[in-house]
Length: 386
Image (cartoon, rainbow, N blue to C red; front, side):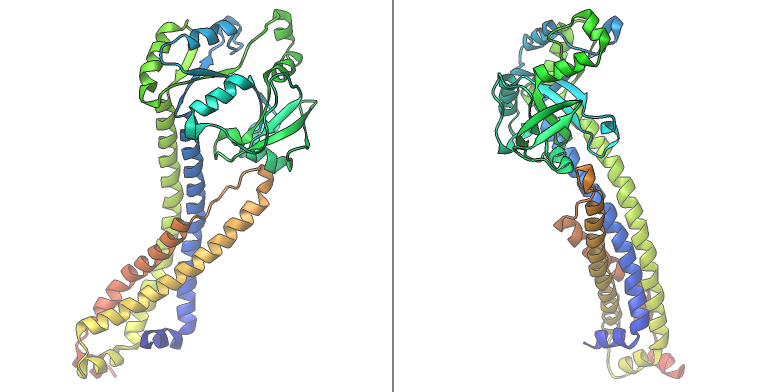
């Protein structure tokens, strides 16, 4: 209680010091919230691609970047390939490429697509509500969570995209990955849209083409099957194994997290300097008090503990205030950007606890030197100064 009284006696200075720590922890929390969301997206991407080998065409002479039915059959014939998921991917509108979660129309052949989702286990796409279409259905859609949220659509509503209307039959569970921005439609509808937009494709009379393919494999054999596939296919393909996709995602996550959290930590350290200043001033003002305590039997440890605990209290109060302000800031930013379909920040329990503990430890570290100075004061010299 004495420590709290000491802080309350200098409440203006204490309040300003707490505020300095709080501003640093606010920055740490907001930056950490972005890092947490990026980690969630990266983990979602890893889960989605862990069973998949991505197959892309470099396009040959015409640079069309399309896969034809013979290419798909060649992929299926590779030993170890369990299923091939084919897609026709089209931007939903002219602004789709500039969003936090880009929105795409993705045409799929439903029977093979659903088999692929079962084989993908945790990385498979699952319905949150509604149902899938029947193989013969046209002009229907199942929406990713970000598309449904951004466009405020649900089961029974109508999706308007690329000059066509699609009845919404279902909404997918959130994956925190690229499929959240997809509107899945029958592949025949997607091919029709793509042909209508390209006079070259119409002139060539292409049929049965797709833009993307994923070979479903056992993750433990991903690299081996990728090598087999590279040997079996004609030239003009780019292959990405599950391990390559996971490593690329991990590297991107590490770089982003280092940059983001580094900025937040710098802000917190700057705030901690105010604790050092406050505690040194407190030692100077209470020199005679320290001398009296030592003269009546207080040990160096008693004095050291008193000043350290005061520093920890300041740091903890700053941490609590900073995390609270950070949570409000994150909620406000997510509310303002909800039109993008995906919240940008994520405040988790571990981030909140880490922010408070970090502030308390930083307060202790910042108060250590002033506390040591107070503990080392000679009682006679301390009393002589006043």
